[in-house]
Image (cartoon, rainbow, N blue to C red):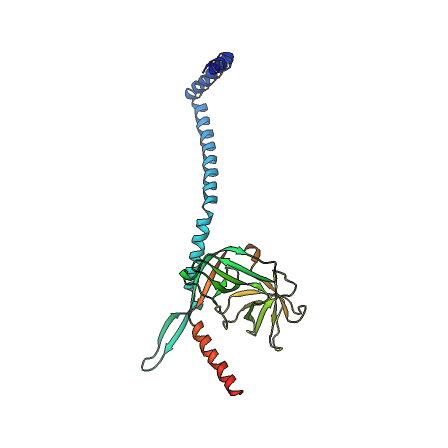
Amino acid sequence: MRNLLIFITKYNAFFLFLIFEISALIIYVKYNAFQKASFINSSNEVTGKLYTQVNGLYEYMSLKAVNDSLAHENANLRNQLKSSFYIDTIAKHKIADTVFKIQYEYTPAKVINNSFNRAYNYITINRGSLDGIAVGMGVISSAGIVGKVVNVTPHMANVQSMLNKYSRFSVMLANNKEIGSIQWTDDLDPHKAVLVDVSTNAQPKIGEAVLTSGYSLFPEGIIVGRVSNLRAKGGGMEITLAVDFSKLQYVNVVDNKFQKEQDAIEALQKKDDQDNTR
């Protein structure tokens, strides 16, 4: 307290000047219409800029909630796409009885771990068996296909990335629907893949889109990439991937409701072939 009094006493002239200056400014603004209006406009402008900065900070802090909301909204929209439904048409005594059954269901998930510069890359997502995720389901993003689920725990799942030398998916050329397979390149470029097993009758073009064929885990027509070179090193065609795996944040897990049934009947066919060769 004594130090405070000494400080005030030492600088009393400055404090008196400050008090008189503020008082004069208040009187000048209060009793002068033009200055009063200018002061109000200036204060409003300063306040507006402050509110803008505060609002910008609030929006930045709420980005995670917004992204989560958009991811769920995108999944719901995908669930309503025509490609997500299977059309079961029965025509007996009726003219036409068409029932739409959902075939593909999408679950949004956030990427919590990701690698893209190794020979065998994997992605961890924050959805697991309690969310309906199971081994063998496909995974896509808003840009294209990502990979397939290979391990599941109650709250998380491990995805074998497209950037994995074990990954191989059925695809087709967009123009003539020629079927082939896509796999990662041997030079481990995270932006490139190779299209192989395409018919010699195919006439691909540079820039042509490569889409999912509908023969595997994914609905038909999801973008995979584009043809960037008709002759890739080691054979096949070079494809520039649509997904930038280094920036992957949100994905959708694809549940093909008919996948188990398809796997079961194809397993029976393989068993029959083996029995016939004995």
